[in-house]
Amino acid sequence: MASKGTSCAVIQDKSAYWTPSVYFIGADGTTELVEQVGGMLAYYFLNGKNIKAFPPEFQMIAGDTLQRNFTWPVPDPPKSDWPSDQKTQKALSQKALGFNCLDYSSAPEPSLFRHFLPEKSYLDAHCKNGVRFELMFPSCWNGKDADSPSHKAHVAYPDLVIDGTCPDGFDTQLPGLFYETIWNTYAFKDKAGEFMVSNGDPTGFGYHGDFIAGWEPTFLQSAIDTCINLSGKVEDCPLFELQTQSKQQEFKISVPSDLQSEDCSGPRAGLPGGVPIQRGPGYASEGPAQSHPSPPPLPATPSQTSTSPTTTAPAQSVPATSVEGNPNQNQPVPYVDPPMTAAPTPPSASPQLSTLSTLYYTTGNRVDEVIVVEEVVTVSCTSTMTLLPGDEYAQTPYRKRFYAGRRRHHGGRLH
Image 1 (cartoon, rainbow, N blue to C red):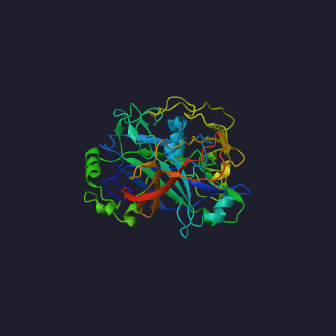
Image 2 (cartoon, rainbow, N blue to C red; image 1 turned 90 degrees about the vertical axis):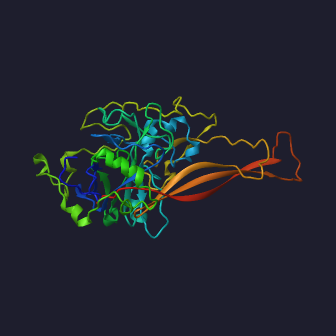
């Protein structure tokens, strides 16, 4: 709030938005900063009702810098099928990471589709326009604390990550912050080596971000209540005072003296700050040759009653290669497929629809929300075959899915 300027497009926004950088480490160990394309985009999702502005001095962290594995099904099942253990805050925080392979000549991937950084061979072959790193922040607040010792305990995710139901004790809804940064990984095509997040994480599971609110709360509340144009463009909000991109780039922060001699761009040996590379899959340590306890438990969502799946269907092993480019392809992940039950009576003339999941696609400054709904249809079949006792072919339900799309509002753009 006391800053003399901002690098944001909206002059009233003096918030701090941060994510780690991405590096390429060559076969000889030489490290080079990967170019970031277009700066950071910070979306403000206005999901839910009675959304409140960030209070003074509010701050939070999303993600876990020491995480090095993902123990949930790959790819994500439809959100309507998530059992209770996939709705814990631990699971939701890991599903809040996305690594979107960009090829503008092909259909886009959904946001938060892939929760790991693909292997370089996959990036070289498929991601001609780089990789978009995505991070969703918690949007449920305990309504009293602007911060907490972990910078996480005062906030929580709704039970569907981007939207849904807030857990007990976190009933106040905040704007849903969603970060996007694009990295030009294709510039290193056919070069031997690997990509690395600057915290020493080659998997992407430890991707994370910081937010420190720099809005005047009364002004932000007015913007939340007023700026609801579905275009999502900051230009369409009459309250915002905007500055040009060149003006944004003029604003610079003062580099601390102990970092002024650090070569953060390279080429150089190793990561800046001597950060060690820790590949996992165990929980990383905060420094070389140190053990670190497992992360503390986070608050549970209302649907969490135990850490076991709610269904009794037999578990199946789904290879982690279900999403291409998975670096943990030799580590199968348990997946529980919910049992299908036959419809007790034929459907009425009006089809019964239920929402399965919601997908988000971003194109430039626009976010499209795609709602996947399901229609259950009962088909009566006449068969001339001889049915043995126990055969049940007379009424077999099948599921038909289609997409209903609508455009969602999003907020500020940063460069």
